[in-house]
Image (cartoon, rainbow, N blue to C red; front, top):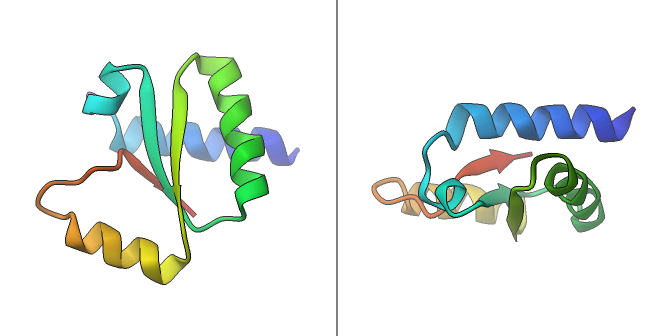
Length: 83
């Protein structure tokens, strides 16, 4: 159940935030996440198997992620945030 919910959440994030993004055009998706690294790996691997889109996770604490997103607001480097 967790894998389907996680994949659905990530797919929703991709649809909302990454449509036409530069990384997706290259078959890759950059995802910022403050989740546990094991959970990210589990969900991102399943997402890659199902879609063929590789995920490049950027992991850190929630405060670090929010500061990074705020600092990149003019020129974001990530495609989606999953948390």
